[in-house]
Image 1 (cartoon, rainbow, N blue to C red):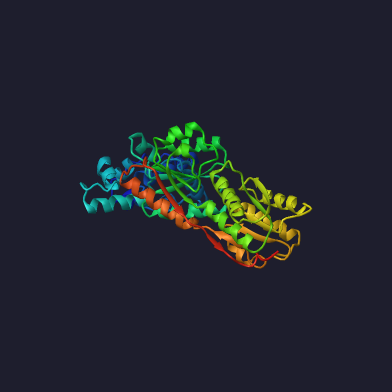
Image 2 (cartoon, helix red, strand yellow; image 1 turned 30 degrees about the vertical axis):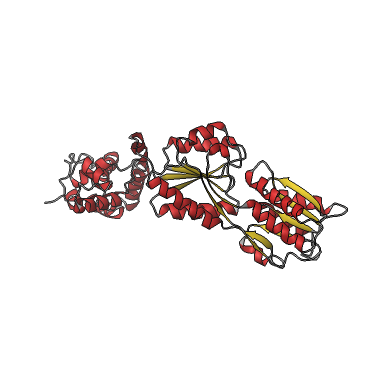
Length: 415
């Protein structure tokens, strides 16, 4: 007569100890644990937790269902840290571990039928490949690191979403790191990512990257996105930031404004420097006498945008138009204008930066610079994938610049 284990697995069950536990509850529990352990760990791919409970109750019916639930739950909890290995799968299928390993790696020496059996058993057992062991053997991981300054910025959340979809299509996994524009945090993330042998790194660099970051990245495939730090290499995907602010400033000048303020990031950042330069060039090339004010600060801070508006409105001859050069600053500016109960564009004209979903419905609709961030991130991801998969030369200079677009709505008009 077949035993319960044979019913579960079709394999010969291990010898059972004699039933010396009838009068000793501790031994009854130990016996249940013994049975459960061999059923789950010895034949982990062949049954379910519910079926095991049923068999336990059938065989050891003296136990209350609560006791069985507690015992099975206790074993489940204690075994959570135990990973299913290739040897476990090999024992179930009665093949060698090397056969299982080759089948999981889609080795052409293994038959399609064996691959199917191995993959089914691995899936049922919850097998997860040990990446650490693979990396110790020098095998590159399928992780790609994304390092950004601030995930709250819609720029970077949009980039992360687009890159994740792009990389996933090629079986790469995106890992997100946030630096808060701190170069030491940036260095730490670069070290951590390279220590796990990532396939590559895509980063929006800080204002002044640490020299050690440059040294480490020379040994790792990487690409810069949005910002470009010459210290980190010559491969870069970005937006024409100077043109973006030139066109928005030119538009506000053409509306007839003579007192204009710019609110944006500091010149320490390459994007901040390019944007404020576009603002200055547009004013200079207009050939008109224009009073300008510049408020330069943290581009990732809505509060800086609020404070800048309060300072500008306190001036005796306050500006009649605001040109903004950062997404988060734009959020702060329009919130402060609303709190001040100003009428736009009658009291003040505003041009934002970035086209958030709500901007078209804000007041009369916000005139703003629309940026092809998702398209840029996808192009960057595809280019990077091509070089990773084809072992391309990532040391050669390469730049891809996307043009911005000025979207004119109702927040700008004559002074």
